[in-house]
Picture 1 (cartoon, rainbow, N blue to C red):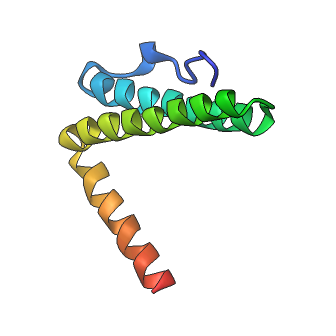
Picture 2: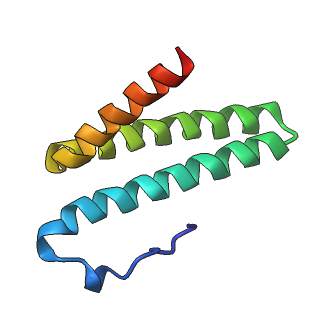
Length: 93
């Protein structure tokens, strides 16, 4: 994503805007996690690696914060998340 909003927010209804904002926040945080972990893998300095991986962990917390808020607003998302977890458990034991 790297600072680009991948959807046209002008096409999002007012009632769905908060959910879309939260999903975009999640996308941005996941993008940041990927970036920081890739940079850490490339960094030569162990101090730089440590800091990048620490920042990556913080971004994972942010994903959780956005997800917690989204699940409050979108009960369908909450049900489907639970269903996905159940399916994985059934498939993997």
